[in-house]
Image (tube, rainbow, N blue to C red; front, side, top):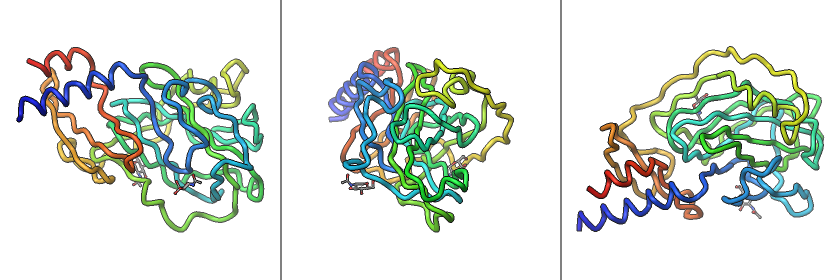
Length: 247
Ligand SMILES: *[C@@H]1O[C@H](CO)[C@@H](O)[C@H](O)[C@H]1NC(C)=O
Ligand SMILES: *[C@@H]1O[C@H](CO)[C@@H](O)[C@H](O)[C@H]1NC(C)=O
């Protein structure tokens, strides 16, 4: 039985490493997610349409962004625009944030230009991942004030760390949809964010199950499955680990 589970796990790893990697935008809800087209700027191949999209009120005084990353390390750009076609007018909301830790990431208290309250707009989340630049968007109504609570889906995977970093690639995207426009690359010298928890326990974010696997580097990687049953995602550990996995 154990052997069988091991093989099943290894197949998952193989699947994850062969499929195109991705991230999920959980809050505000994405306007659309296509694993294969997530690298298409500015919104992962989707067109913003306020008549059909899931439109969320986003508080300019501070509100939350919730993502799930399948990369052990990746860098985020959080940006927003009042251009409801998402074609331009992007303003970055924070310096680039480097996440270390696989899984859920909650950036709370993201602040928007107060003068945007009362307008429709688009929030863009861009991930600079080892396999490319990936895009997701949310259609929002900017509203005044600060959110009084954090959505339950907005959590940090145990052991996550995050810090502001300089990411020239993301800086070049801050004001454009495609990265071809010029930009004033903001310097990002913020303070490092804090570590929570340990790396050996499983996610507290809502996993339906978890499993551990030893990688060839003897590190323990924790996997969590089950993002509302919609996506099954697993760690992209690498094909070397897959081979090691079967031994
Ligand atoms: C809109 O997003 C919310 C929050 O993610 C979700 O609960 C709801 O089902 C979504 N509605 C539609 C129509 O997709
Ligand atoms: C998640 O971790 C980041 C980085 O440490 C932190 O800024 C953020 O506030 C945390 N989110 C929650 C919901 O605690």
